[in-house]
Length: 409
Image (cartoon, rainbow, N blue to C red; front, side):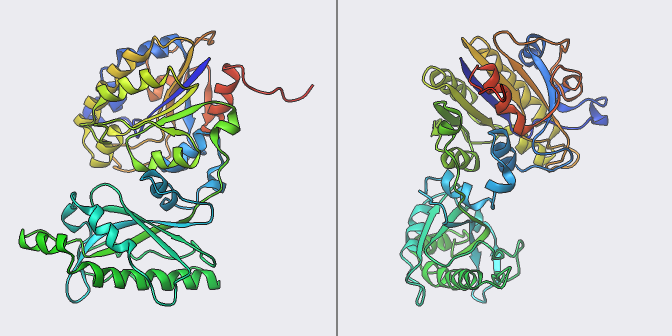
């Protein structure tokens, strides 16, 4: 038996007056999701706990059966692992922006004109930096997508208990990074970051790529702004935890990073951009091919979340309808338990994550089919699973796959 968990990022929502008090999921054309609901067992899920506004990172950690309150130290480690940095337990990792500073030190563009090209060349200059007085600390810097990058500090005597350098707005200087406790480790890490931010400007302001950008009337990427510090956790490999050969198919570096830290195989899909224009056909093909080689696949599809954050109702409805076509092409996978859900709600009216529970359905051999006939937030609540938490999913799946150990005599 095999297992698939497909997470439609941010799919769940709230009823909206402009669509007759339906949710976008209810308003979308979802004949294949509805078929799953009719053929499966349904329920609603709190990714972490009722009322907790889960991030995509913490919800996926929970759904995979790890305790997010123990594993999650911050977004930085997962972003770093997601872009291919070989992080080690104890490393301190950060998300970063390539940004634009003027000659007075003020940030005039936090995203450096949304730079997209040749950031690898800029990143290599950061990697060449040696900070006086901190020669014992290795600096690992790597570009991500667009204006984003990651920073990893490796060495003795470091801490993730430091504040951000990002001022979160233009017209301000980078924030002075401060220790968040009185430890020598936090003081040392804050000093490193402040020196690195300052030095990054000195190194990048005359970089050939930035000179060219200025000549093209584009904002240069002449400073880095670290944020989201986190100590890289020691995570039990997923394959050892469950005895399954596993893979992860995801569009965003964040989810790939979770898969990497759990030592799952990462299946790269060309054209999977993480937005509403992502190549769903390529994702579908990759899922079909991977299902032949793996016992378990975690899938994340991102576009509905993007539409929710943008407050774009029509875009969210249309994207959910497109994902339904993907579901239709995957329903006949042999000997497979298929779990369809979301990682959190991203309501159009809020344009951010909320603590609302999300719908969930499981199909597969010998499932106790309930009376639910539509896949939606409201209908799923009437299903045979009732209301569960994200941390319950892998237990349920392992039991269905007959891979659970008996508890007791």
